[in-house]
Image (cartoon, rainbow, N blue to C red; front, side, top):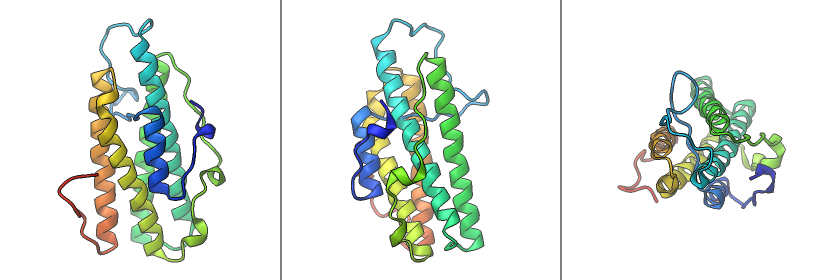
Length: 194
């Protein structure tokens, strides 16, 4: 799936949700080697392998989107120094996710999607007037990602990929909570993620 053919919606949160629904979910696991730990069996002839690669590529496209969004926030000049440091840290985690996704897609025999130019994402940069606007924008993206992961983890044929996706769900949820807290809002606004 080519990231440039993805339908965009009017809000970043809905855009991420719809992108996940189109191709499933991504995973961006954590290993020192830079790829996900996969079982020793061969996936070469497996249809489920192709489905997992498609979902991983959707996820990779979303990681590129998150990296670009945090860059917009960092370059906005609207973030105070401590908040900027947290935003750059979150961007670094999304870069780590993207690196692992790329490696895993290659390991499974696929071709990773390419990042789009930042303008192609249609971020609402004209609506970012202060630090709170930037934080709310980022929180919406993180909430959308967490919701998408939750709904699609079971779609992976490879259970190791599903576990890694669930791990990233936790990371996205922590980002969302921290951003809500920085806004002075309840960092855990509900008992369940919708």
